[in-house]
Image 1: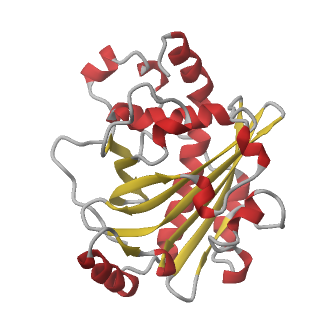
Image 2: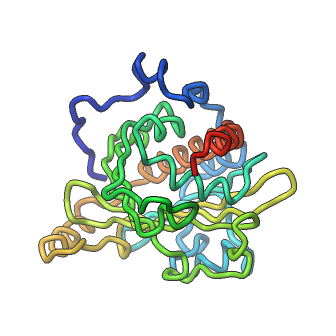
Image 3: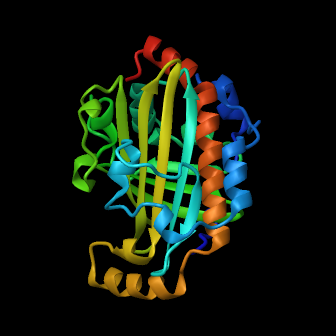
Length: 280
């Protein structure tokens, strides 16, 4: 995968001024917990046969439980894509909190760094969300530009959040944000007009919290040009010269498992504090 060059002034971690002034500074915790056993087992198992993980077209049925699917693992496809699946338990977290988080975290780099202090560098909205917008309306159709490490590779990504129904993700449970939500996005390179894939996070309420099922579809058939003829030409070349590797798939699986597990450690208390402070 294509690496990005660091930008001056962007860095891992918070500086002293942020720690002294940000009202949510107490939630910054660089202690990332060990990977859960199911993720470790998936890494030990190695690449799965391509048919065992759903394509984007068939993913809605597996996410909503209509068909059985492997919860944790990765596959490299014949056309040069990678598919990554991860399941995360989120104790104390509601689906509504996840919607709030996705609309909140790209307002500043420091907020984004809370999510994975050892990997997240910068985040900013391409265009600010509409004033007064809340929950899903604050991030759906918006684009977040993020700098983050996936493994040791620094990537600058454009994450354009999409209405779930446009990708076929519809079910009655999504009508109640307290019971379920699904975050969908087109992921691309921020510095060149190429979209490289899709991400999907389905969150369903459980006793004592929620469970999240994450899917990533990167490269191969999922890569395309973005808004220009040049992007289309570059995407064709990218399918050949930027094919995801097993190391890329492993790094993405680890990153997802770490950041979602870490998010659950502080999100309920952060959400409660921000609601008390009137942040929507």
